Length: 290
Image (cartoon, rainbow, N blue to C red; front, side, top):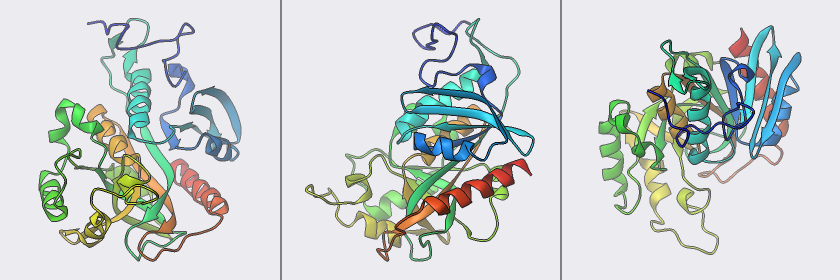
């Protein structure tokens, strides 16, 4: 069955619509970053570069590091952008763009998101590397997909919504796990593991108050105190739940590693995190090419 042109948009040059890439432009291992400017920093470590493409917030570089072909791609901010990037990356490897048919042989991608985050427990201090073993989605995006119930943790979700007295006007939170294969690679000094909340905003949805009060001024306190089977919520960011959920549904491996740049509990932060981010990127590059 052919996928209609209205559902799978392809540019005149044969590239997929938003990220502007062709199947041959990407490697099997892809580093995802939010900030387009961070792509150049990651690619500065590459031994050579084959592909450079840029459209909107989606900037892509493919090249070699330690004799392994890698891609780094910026997603922009938020789970809505992850929905675009993940579906289009999967289409590049698992759909024939010429015939608009799904390929018989499935190809699996390894997706490593590298970002920044704020700690929600005192032990996650600025400068630490936080590996998100699981992610709680506040965004609601994954709820639009049929098979979400097959990959999420219903008991956790029920315990979380009951403990926080979750507002029924908000999207139902869901919890989904990272790829154990990739989590196991992200180990070493300064690496910590936790459960990450992927928020659908930076201010109100993460409990920040400027001129607008939040619907539940105690939500962050509840999140900080919540514990499930000995595990606590570790940090906030804005993409991992969609990354993990879509990757599982589409048959890919995914993990997020964030540099903690602030702690919401102890109220401290690092003033210039860029050297620390470069160190983290170099370490991850070595891990995925070892």
